[in-house]
Length: 213
Image (cartoon, helix red, strand yellow):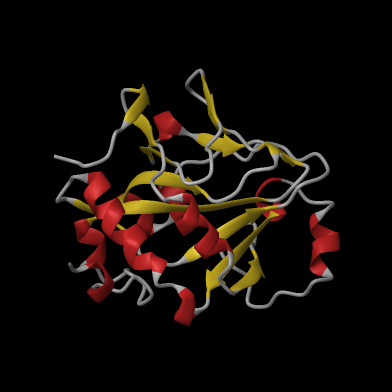
């Protein structure tokens, strides 16, 4: 039985309070983070230039995000996250991808909702293996930033240290509202079926060794 208290706001959407302690959250945020732009396809750009932030102020949706990788010597907390997520899922048929990155949503300006879901053909062959999405909040002090589900009467704001888990299916198409006042920092990623990690399309960065406990 899972050690976590799952609070359901839908039969298939739940959150867990204090998934990370405040001390653990602060340790994450004090780490060295290498920030990169996120392209319109959601992937990190090859290079990041501070001047590009000016361009982002005119953009919307996905283009108003940065992705950050933790310094390899400061990602000790990642083992904590991976182990807890494995316990949280409580499902031997799927695993969380163990890539240590953080997403920064930039404040200011108006940007439209970017609705998406992950297990569809447009995501490429990887989409067929995607089962769940989640958002682990790492800071507060901002307004807006709620996760909204297009086909459900649900709009939810995740608090620092809490994690929101939901299906990656079309029924749970979702978007993030514009952020005001301060940048929004989260770790949001996906869960894949076990078949993905044994497939030829599994990227090398999704280390099989990292997922074996």
